[in-house]
Image 1 (cartoon, rainbow, N blue to C red):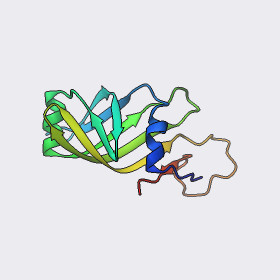
Image 2: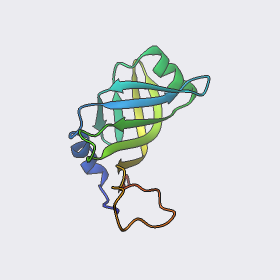
Image 3: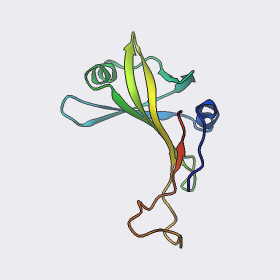
Image 4: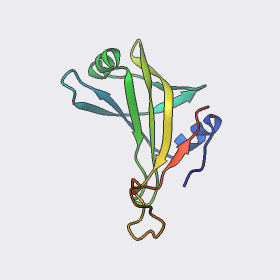
Length: 126
């Protein structure tokens, strides 16, 4: 199932969530997750007051992801990928992809062989 959500509607979609997890990659290649409040300004996600480790990781490896967890098991998670620029203590993230994601019910009869087994909604960033 694919229901496009235009970039101008992304702020509205984000407002349905309480917080996000910002994911960066450490020098050792392990994930580093921190809880953040992100805001959308134009087509850039702003994350204020980031920690030293998060900024270090983003400077070295600017490809980051954010995950807004669902309110319940039947709701969607919002997942956004982008490229981060460090500006003082903040990250300015230019989005490359956003999707609403949840596992498909195991009893769903329309699951195709070889499908990923999820119920995703791509968000158009164009």
